[in-house]
Structure formats: C-alpha cells, structure tokens
Image 1 (tube, rainbow, N blue to C red):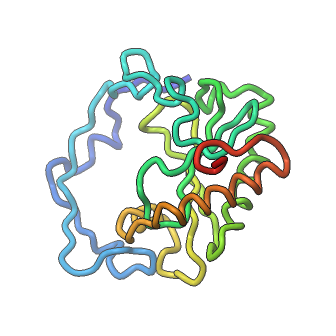
Image 2 (spheres, rainbow, N blue to C red):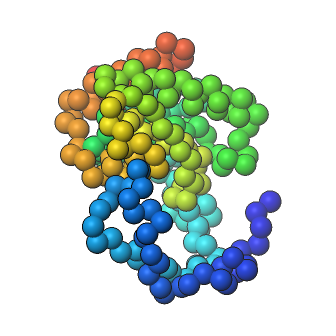
Length: 204
C-alpha cells in the first residue's frame, strides 16, 4: 500500500526556491556538460501528486489506447516499442505487458517472465552492429502502465556510460530512419527466436 502523500522531514529540510550547486557532478566521468552549468531552482512539492496517464483522473493510457503504436515486436503477453521519437542512440526501446498493470500488481506469470524478458531484450539490442552494452531503467512517473526502458550504448563510446546515456540520446544527431529500421529488424528477429513476431517497421 502506498504511503500517505504528505510532507515529511525530508521535504521540510530542502532549500526550495534556491539554485543548488552543480559541483558534486561537474567533472565527473559520466557528466555530459561542461562550462557554466546552472541548476534550476528547486520547486515545492505538489501534494497530492497529479495522476499519471492511465490512472483515475489522468489522461488515457496511450498503450491501451493504441497498443501496437511504435511496436517492433510482440507476443501474447509483452510488446516492445521503439522509435517513439528520434534518438541519437542506435536503439531506445520500451518493454510493456500487453495488459494494463502496475509493477505492484503484475500477475505471477508476468513477474516470472520479467527477468527472462529483460535478459532477452538486452541481448537482442546487443545484436545491433556497433552496440557495446545495453542499459535498462525503470521510470514510472509518466504512465501507470508498467514499462522498462532499454538504451543501446555505442561500442567504444566510454563517455556515454552511466546514468546520462538517455540524455546523450537527446543530444547526439538522430540516427537515419533507414538505420533505425534495420536496427529494429535486428532486435525483433533476435526476439522471435524464442517467441512472438516482428511488428511495425521491423515487419516491413
């Protein structure tokens, strides 16, 4: 059960309205910026939080509204989406269950699938020519529908390692559409070795 949404001692000690120093991250091996960097003023908390997409009172769940939009692979339980917007990385993908679940109420079957699916998608992304590693992250602040992000780190690009890989995806020049389609087919083909079928551009 979620805890009550109220200010805590943590909230009360934060310096709202102030610009905090970026010094702790400046010069770090994974920091993407240099020079005059300013942190935006810290905003007051919004309590109760506004509903996410798919929650009561929020906008419709975009996955449930159009389940195969941007999908490159799917089976009876899962769908992998990619190409939601142009990226400078070889692949940015999103793994979701076909049915609407949160992390805390995933069925036992989906929970049993989740680890192997993460392993499969990470391995499929590494089949793309020139990919050194697959990063994956779970962010749940935009949509209630459970999802896991996957990011392809180009081989040899050591500066792109770490938590700012997704930021580099926004900064680097977007990959050409034909290259993205080839990468999508590579990932979908690798996944179909176990189950499912290519969708969208990967099926063309």
